[in-house]
Length: 199
Length: 199
Image (cartoon, rainbow over all chains, first blue to last red; front, side, top):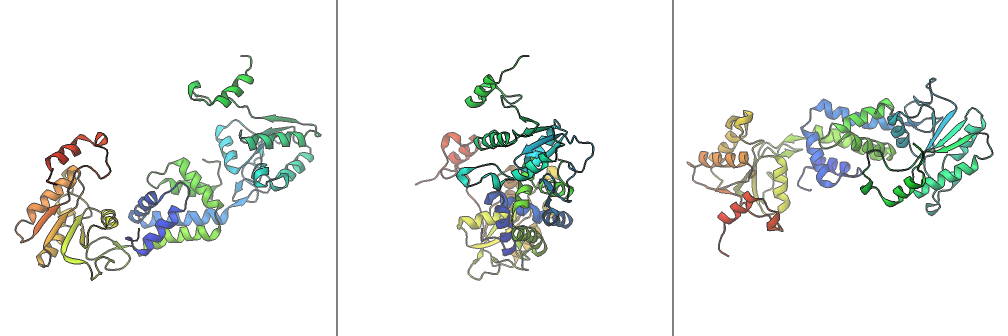
């Protein structure tokens, strides 16, 4: 690596800090950047800082936003009675991409994880309860991951919301669409069998 | 993708322009950047521009450098009588990493490729001949790739240098070290057999 001039070396090292980017890939990307037109390089460099500078959390759903209130929370066409609870901003984006949901979101910014010392006060549960107490929400869809921690978090929220007059639902788990049964793991198959339904 | 705020979207699009980085990876990298401390992000952004701004070609070997003459060309400890000819700056770095060469380099910045309209005047052949005419070089090692174009370029240079009193050599090709014979391609094996030598 020390065979590159210092400024290139620095660039390679900084790129290699990104997740999933090894030294070889970083080297390849750095050489590509050096070969690119100056305007392109400037755009990349600027957009990195701009995204970081402009990024804040939406005051309502706690998703990524570059305004105080994000595009979804400020959209009057969305259903105020439906609230989808997810772990992270990227989960919200994944759900949005599916186009299956037209309500509002609430991002927990984490999951309950006693092993890592993350309790109910460390994720945005208080804010969720406060939202529900305002009384406009009729259904809460728990869309945390189907991991052990995600399931535990969903179960905890379900229990905590029992005293409110609302429907609490959980996204379905089962065989992924397009999934070949022989490649689906046993736990998923078991779940799919348990949750079988009339057609 | 349009589910992200504009500044994040712009960052994702700029990252996705890098070679080998798809939209999914770009998304992952962008979210990582947003989660990173501001100083780290600043370092990355700055190093991109700094590398691009400082980068120039070494006046002597035409490799990447941030000075007029690169570290290798300005190193008095290296052998002036030995010149290694490579295609690209990255090839020089690969050779340097091997630690097998202590001479000087000459970077062609390409290979002869009649199919793509690249002839002898489009790569740094004139500069190579000029270097040789200065008379200090005793051996030229042709280390272009072992592709069809790399071989053709090596053959062309060999011919062109015939009138000078110097040794022209080619890097050896054969089975890579640590290579399992059954996974080595047929052309390489044929070459390795043809070039067999006493032990």
